[in-house]
Each structure stands twice: as structure tokens, then as C-alpha cells.
Image 1: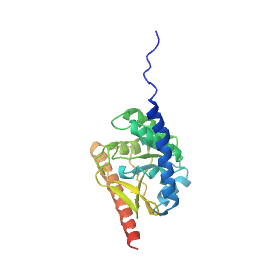
Image 2: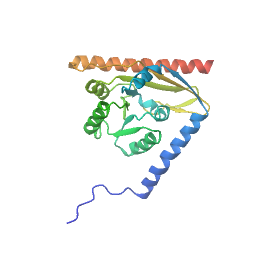
Image 3: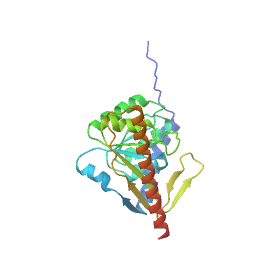
Image 4: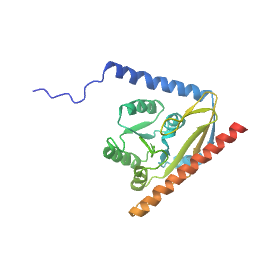
Length: 232
């Protein structure tokens, strides 16, 4: 008796969209990138780790998920991406910009993805996590980021970007940033945050809040710098 095919081939329409949409997105992002300028704040926070051959975990708010693969391209960073259908498009974009992915989230395939992430970090490779994704609430760090840093003993680097010319999707839960051509990208890298290996439940929560506050401060620094450039 033939085995039932549990992974049927996607419909032609889905395969066509999966081929075309990531290509179109990366084309648009490269166009915006080459027409724009970039200002980095605190880039040495991650470059020092990179030059020393050490790994790190980029912590990126979901509001920045669109252009972070472009701005952090060619770093062989494993991005934690949802196992959903939409995640497949993001996965293609991430790979086109010279990074990799681990598929899963807190809601779908979380346990397996978490184990893969720890193994990846222990090999001395970097990773990127959106700690308030995929569904929010926005700007609230979920435990997965802290657990990853705690077990792997790899430091967290907050990352955020704002643009002098951008659209903000105000009706979306994450207030997503959409850069426009001829903008100035302001990219802010926070100081490395190391999470102790042994923590009580109360101490774990303190670390979660510490990381969250550092990410919020890094975000605000980025917003202030972009606003200063607009006025300048």
C-alpha cells in the first residue's frame, strides 16, 4: 500500500508567488538602499564581537522586520522566522541577503526551533530574534530571547532602524516602518547584554525587563537621531 503524501506540492499560484514576491521585495529594497544614506550609531558594539570571532544575538523589534535583512546583510545570521506561510516569503528574502533562517516560533514549531537556535549559537554563529513577534504585544520582550542568551551564553545586541523619510503603518499592531527612496537610514546598535546562566524565576524576569528597557532605550536613541537629521 502506497504511503499517503503528507506534504503535497503547493498549488502553482503559491509557488509562483513564492518565486516572484521575494525577488520583487529584494529589488525594491536594493533600490531604496542605493538611493539612500546610512548613519550608524554604536556599530562598534557588534563589530568588536565580530572581529574577535564571537557570536551575538540581534534583538530586533517586529516594527523593523522589513528592512533588517537588508541592513544586516551578508553576516550569515540565522533569523528566527515563523513556520507560517508568510514566513516562507521572509525566509526567501533573508537568504537573498546573505543570511540564513531557523523556522519556528512560540506558536508553531517553537520547541524544535529553540533547540536549533541554541545549536547554531554554540557553533559560534550569530542569530536574530524579534522578541515581540510574530503576534505581539509590540515592544514587549517574550521569554524566548532571554532563554536563548541564558543557555547559549551569547550576548544580545539590540538593533533598531528609523528613517528620515518613511511611512509608518499606524493601523498595524507593530507600527511597521516602511522606508522611502532617498532617505537616511539611522541604524542603532546597543551595547552587548550578557544574561547569567543560573537564574531564579524572579531573576529571569529582572533580566527580561533589563533587556526590554535596553531595547527601548536603543529605539529611542534611534528615533531622536532620525528626528535630528530631519530637522538639520
